[in-house]
Image 1 (cartoon, rainbow, N blue to C red):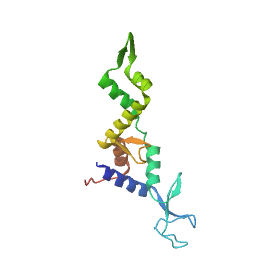
Image 2: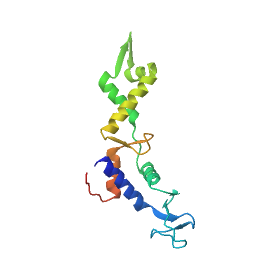
Image 3: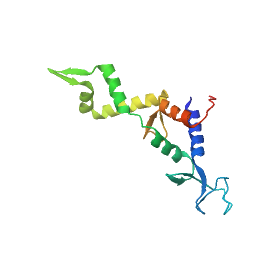
Image 4: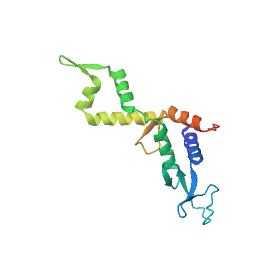
Amino acid sequence: MCVKNIELNLETIAYQKTTPFCYSCYKEAPTGTCKACCSDDLMRILPGSGCEYGTDWVVKELLEENLDSADISDSFELMIEDCYGETVKVGFLELSTVEVMKDQDPISWDIAKSEYIDGLVEDEQLITFDNGSTHYWIHDVENFIEENLEIEEAC
């Protein structure tokens, strides 16, 4: 499933799990128009979470509630160990390659980790909905969509 379809499907799920809500009258308006004031300027209410305009916040809330964010640190460390070996010899000491790299140059470590994450996002293995603050494995998001929505892929 392509990223665009994932975003569209998550928006559809957000609409299905919320109800239009008139904040002025503080009433649900399931028809799309408030029966009390006839307004169609409606928020979306998610039971147990609150109400707000748009669906971005609903998607974020649903993902946080139903999925674990990707543990990229472990994945990155495993990749480093695969590339450079689990241990490195410094003088007569046999040390963890990952720990040496982290301790000796934390800035380079963070840059390399950031580039690794960018590569996973580019390869569509990871996805983010908040500009990189939280990442999810794309297969977990696809499974969430399949459990919550009947989809037709049209990429």
